[in-house]
Image (cartoon, rainbow, N blue to C red; front, side, top):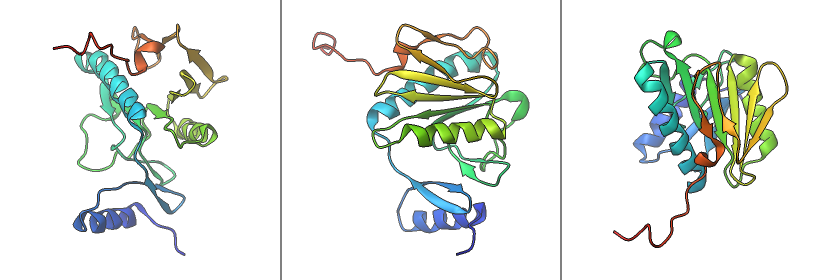
Length: 191
């Protein structure tokens, strides 16, 4: 079987769309992978993180934040879509109406119920190897946040600790507990 390209993936996406199907796909080493849906806890964590980042980044015009639908063509020709990503403004003056053809500065992967930590960590390390400045793995099951950089060992944060990314967002701080979906009391739900 021949190696698939980004153009081949686009043709598959077009065929799916014409058939009324909407699948998110990635391309890795010439093979197309269909990405399954996330559980809603993982989705909510992604939304929360995007909101916190956007609220800090947008007024400062530091760059662009993307969700899991934003695909990036990597230097190794793979097409990847991190759960959350950020690209500095100096590297992406205007978003193209296409995939990003660069490695994001920040990549975040959020473990869903069926994910394996080792595979997610390997994906993040590949992003770092290709040029990402920071990679983050969020594990809702363990309530941990693991930060990867090109130099040094990963740093694991737990509840009670503060997530910072000074190399990309000087001054930004987020308590790890703010990532987890809240549990509402009955009193709070009374309108």
